[in-house]
Image (cartoon, one colour):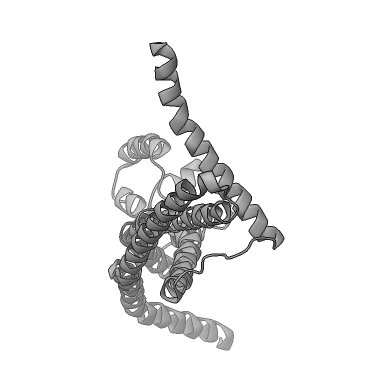
Length: 300
């Protein structure tokens, strides 16, 4: 007998929960079919907050879908570009330093560098690829040639630009992508969950009202109490969701994250502009020299 009572005490809450869920499902189905009556209206302030939070949530998803690109360092590296491990295995800085080595030292250095790069290859970016290709060209032409000298300068600058870009990518990933995702998954996620609780509480309330309307006399009082309890739960759910949605909308962090993204981009373009501004006159001067040599050779 005691075991039966214990089993019944466990079964009753479960039955009540299943009954509540069934009532919610039934109410939802009736609303979809247009047969439900007396649907509880949500406050206008609440509905306005829902629209604003939906817009904020969509903005987070849209920007994250794009800015996650910065977490892939090879996003601007041409897919069709093929480089051997030897070409890819050393940065231009490594190669410049190797110029001063003896043949034996150079061979040992290249072997060590190749082995090191096998474990941690430099990132594949368009700027680094331009740097490597330009340096290879300068080696083949020779620094005594204007074109070879210009390629050498261009290679050095492009490697630095590639490094600047990787720095920007890291800044955006840590100061924008990561916190933006955290906001989406925490504050906005909590608000969305609270809104689902409101929907369930409203369905339960309207289901209880419908049952009370058609309750038998002996069930009338108990059904009325159920309506009151459902109303209390609905009001509490609306208040909680309203508070959480306001917190989401007032949170200054997303705008701070966007400012950090802009700052990272500004730093990159400023550094790139400065270093290109330094090398552009030098390459332009080499171009003028080459043109003068060309004209002299034609006039002889």
